[in-house]
Amino acid sequence: MDSALITHLQRYRPKIGQGRGSPAYRVLAMKPSSNGLPNEKQLQQMPYEELIANLEAITSKMASGEIGIEEATDLYATAKMIYKMASDRLESIRLRIEELEEESQ
Image (cartoon, rainbow, N blue to C red; front, side, top):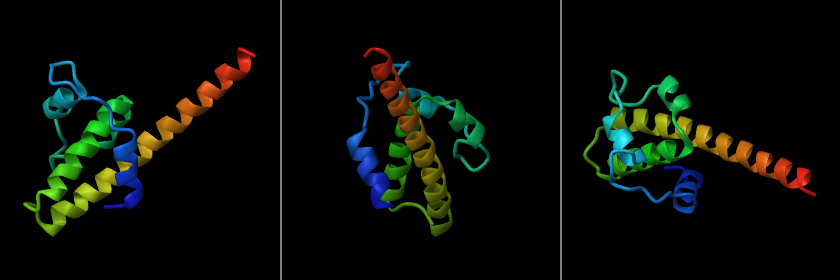
C-alpha cells in the first residue's frame, strides 16, 4: 500500500465508537456496489470520518492476506480514490480555517 496513504491513516485516524451512529457502524451498514465496495457517489456523500473508516476497513482486508490479486487490485484502486477525497476535504478545511483566522484579525 502507498506509504503516503498509511501515514495519512496513522496521523488522522479518528476515534471510532461502537454505537449505531458511529462511522464504523455506518460503513458496515452501507449498501455496497456490486463488487462489495462503496461506489463513487456513496463516497462523495460521506463525511471525512466515514471515508477514513472505509480506508481502515480496506487496509484491514488487504492485510488479512485472504483475498486474491484481482480483489486486492480493486481494493487498492478504491483506497486511492478514498484517500484523494479525504485529502481534498482536509485541504478545503485547512483553507477555510485560514480564511476564518484572517477574518478574525
